[in-house]
Amino acid sequence: MNEPQMQNTNGIKYISSNLLERTGVVHAFLSRVGGASSTPFDTLNFDGRDTDKKENIAENNLRLARAFGITAPVATVNQVHGNSVFLLDPSTVDAKAEADAIITSMKGAAVGVLTADCVPILVLDPVQKAVAAIHAGWKGTVRLIAKETVEAMRANFNSDAKDLVAAIGPHIGPCCYSVGTEVADEFRRSFGENPACLKPTGEGASADLGEANVSALLSAGLKKENISFEPVCTSCNNGLFFSYRKENGRTGRQLSFIALR
Image (cartoon, rainbow, N blue to C red; front, side, top):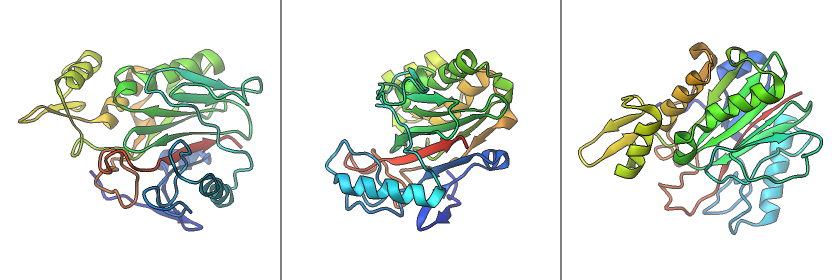
């Protein structure tokens, strides 16, 4: 996959989408660089479920706020590798739902997902003024979490899929993501024999989570030209991104977020 083209704000390295930049929406696919956490969470870790110190997570959030001018905490969900979508509105703002996507039309709200090989997807509806953040591991991918999120935006905000702009961020690439027969069969059930999503190898198959989610977004009605795909492998670029597979499960989580002004 491609060599990452990183941006740097106040020491925080990140990737942004050209498509989303044109709309002016605040967003970023953050790297692991620029935070306060120690090994193995070094350094810009946002996941407090492991043994990283709470004060490190708090400091990382403070640095995020300063770098991007975010006044409210980034809203996240308890990710469960499914296809549920959480609606963030004034009545649910204090809730902590189990879901793998979060949508909102609340002005001033920022939504995000945590990843370490899984696919982060950020979505903007520039017409209805709504955003979404999606976490797509292999289970969420084959359960079409991306398509379910588009449907949820249509139901809650009257979004037209043809207006939506979506950006797919850094994730483990097919170069490093070999899967067994069971997972390969799940991909075939959801995406058919699409060679862009699943390629046979000598001992099994190589899955392309990014291309699979592009396929899901297209099937939901998005225009191809409105989908930005950053083919950056988190495993190949472990110095810049947390990688669950590369680090044998002992690692942090980077944040990808999008905010409505």
